[in-house]
Length: 182
Image 1 (spheres, rainbow, N blue to C red):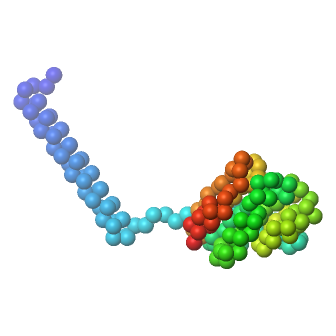
Image 2 (cartoon, rainbow, N blue to C red; image 1 turned 180 degrees about the vertical axis):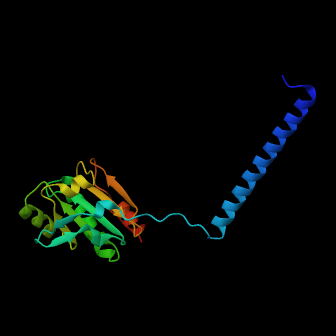
């Protein structure tokens, strides 16, 4: 037990330390706010998504590198020709892709043969690159369990994944999501 004259010193020391901590905390908060306000510190930029480190083959047999999409707004659309929702979405994606030349669209087809994939592309006038992912490696890279699915990339490399196995994405939702990329 502290002697009465020492209790007073201990209490003063504790109060002094608390004042010091409160002042230090206030100065730190004010300093960080000033740095952010005056632009001396900026939020970190997103790094390129390492999932884009893939190669594939277009339906016509040409090589394709996912790294060609780095730094660009892009839409990856995972589809199959026999999927009813993919068939429902195809006219919308064809229309939205044509209306947004600043966004790169890439279809990634799987679970079918090339002739059916080519027929699907022709039927819906899909005027953008479509890949033959027969071995499912790109689908696996993105953890796509079923079709249709989308990955929407912003130019900074950040992305969002959309996979709805119960309905097709509406033209309005697709248009809104693509508009948000640029």
